[in-house]
View 1 (tube, rainbow, N blue to C red):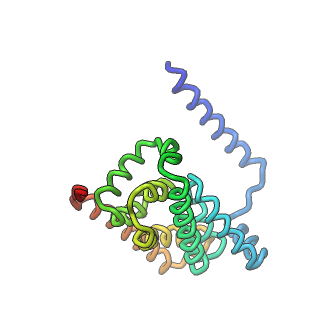
View 2: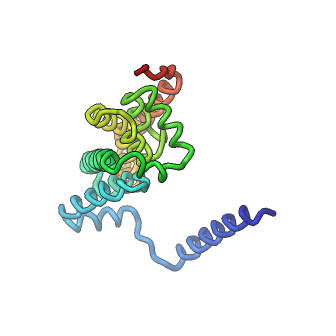
View 3: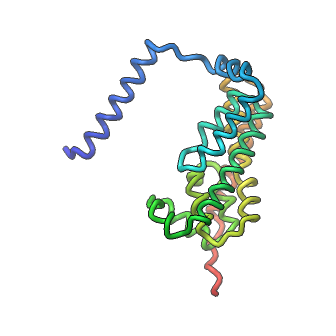
Length: 217
């Protein structure tokens, strides 16, 4: 058997085993206790959390855990506004940073196969592709940021498409996090399902739309 396959499998098995064993011996607070802890820290914690959210996700680090925790810690109103604001700041800082650094310095770090697909869509659809890439599970947040910066997409259309495209998935995930904290409001759960459906519908429609050829010149 190929050792390149065996080693990762054994490593993953060991990690899972450690997590399972640790869960029996290390006390883990409930989600509702985590929310109470966050509320006890006061308004300063809100600014610290969303500031960290914006800064950390400039790097190629998934934003989904931060979005879920936005709902868990702060509920739907603060969670949605904070997650959208932090994500927008992160997307714009990433965009300007990559453009300032330059294409040649950044491109060697963009080696994942998904990058070619993202660049293809951006070259054909421009800023309209940004909105579709922001929809649920379209592509990693950081990859969309970096590739958009390397394209010819102007900053303002990029900003608008980012906010519009992120909204359905972000709202749905924050509401899901709120539900995980024990806030089982049927209306909010229904809204979460609706926003997930909007995101998925957008992805399906985008996939069926023809991709135009690049404009000469």
